[in-house]
Image (cartoon, rainbow, N blue to C red; front, side, top):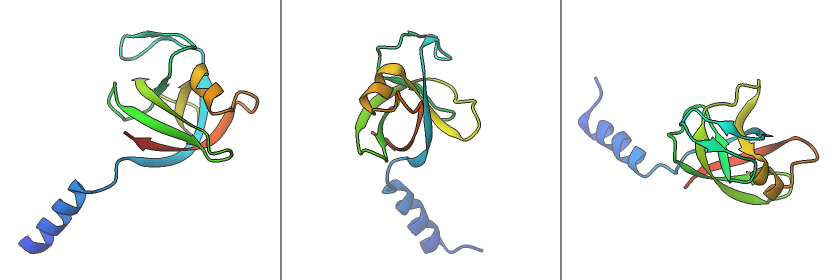
Length: 110
């Protein structure tokens, strides 16, 4: 059985855990109707993520060049294998990933 002190140490450490930090492949899309009900276009700084709540702001950093952008989660996905986030075209331009189509990124919840 777990001791109360150990339980409290684990519980308190979760309170001070760093925000979501995730690394993986990102791609971009053009926009349209989203799972949150919003209509998006290619010019907004938005993204799709499988589990983050709608409205969550995340900082996305391109690991190849260090460029960053802050986007708002408005959709579910990505559904492509091996990807962790889909970005709007405007966000992809900010990260300089239009030419390659995808990039390895770090995602930090704001």
